[in-house]
Picture 1: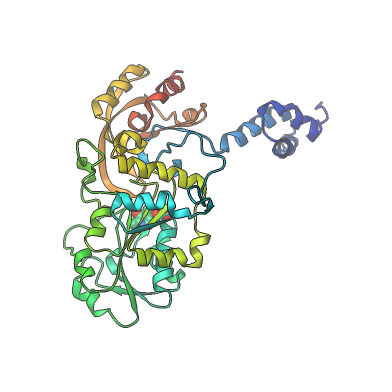
Picture 2: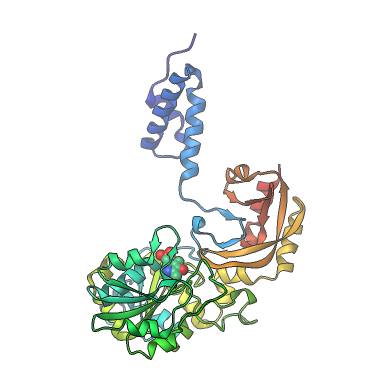
Length: 421
Ligand SMILES: *Cc1c(COP(=O)(O)O)cnc(C)c1O
């Protein structure tokens, strides 16, 4: 004989110590009562409710340990953040010198412009917003000339042709998938042409019988050249790294060099190789950045103080040239493999194996960074995800691989605990 089901309120109150808001516990309680009734097992309501509450808590946004070895893991927020205690009020639009209304660009955007050698910069919510705003402001109702080899899809839902048509510009495709020459661009220049757009093919490579036209050559045409760089590598010579650019950065186009080659504007993400928060940056000539800043969409796409504060920290690191030590992404990316291996061995929780970390985030496809990992029998990723804080690892050939390169050294004890049965 089954007992009568408890009341929703009673079940919810019994879960109060989970710390979840009562309204959410009421939903959990209702579901637990319904599923117990369906199973003809009213005695199990408490157990079902506890497990339901644990699931709700586990789905909340929370810090995780990234043991995947993917430095810019799109599902884990791309570049790791370095902000500890964000300001409560800040002078986001207040000029503390003049005591009057200030400009949102006066901090992060101006410092980033200075760090990459641009006349001006504007910060928006992400890389897609940056190119959307740039094309809307500079080319609505006119032609945007793009190589057929660069009409790409990057990440979920970012497709260059769709973005151009959404911004009200007309796409003029030139050349072919594998070869686009200067002549192809030149023939498309009409009175209606507003700009040439080059898009970095971040997440794939076309090799073999290929040819593309560089920024310098296109800039000589007189039309503004806008380059969507994606990754936001600020300077190809990496002056913030004592040892210079790492070998795995091969061929990654950089902001400073693209601007000096003659690009009128570049756009890039804040949370890829720049190593900052989710943001998009438009950098280049004062006139064109100004046109973007004055466009009504700029207001709709502007980031908040949280993002600007984090991005200002990033810009200051580049200007001080200590980004190699102060930006977590660059720390992780450049720590010697021997040091990663030493940490893995010091944990003594399982066999240590050589592995390859990857940059990820749709950048540098096929490029690996030598690393070291703890290798465990079978797939124990579900168990690792349920530890607190959750640890995210990867599975390779039936074994669980915990790559130490993307784990912060202060998280080693957390990883050791999660890996100890
Ligand atoms: C990543 C990327 C984007 C999209 O940037 P989000 O910040 O993800 O919006 C656009 N263009 C290129 C070339 C990229 O690599």
